[in-house]
Length: 66
Image 1 (tube, rainbow, N blue to C red):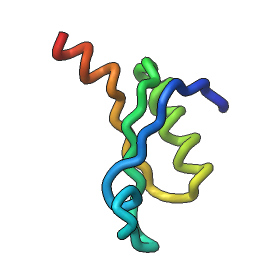
Image 2 (image 1 turned 120 degrees about the vertical axis):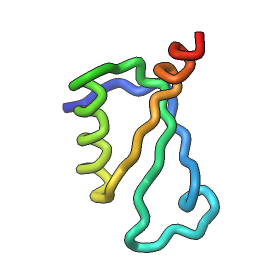
Image 3 (image 1 turned 30 degrees about the vertical axis):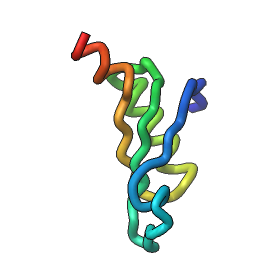
Image 4 (image 1 turned 60 degrees about the vertical axis):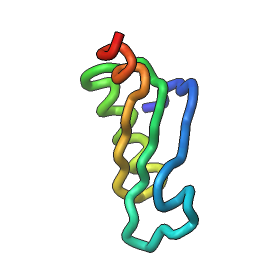
């Protein structure tokens, strides 16, 4: 499954340059995807990088503040 992404932002241990072999990847994304489509994006990223991935959708968080 390939989903179009608008923005990707690396954060935490990878950005700081201190990631170890067992470090997960934390990403802040602006995908505007919800439900199973968002889970599909997370699974696609996880299988591509072969690491655990935590995704936080910026749009979803801003919408709740709105």
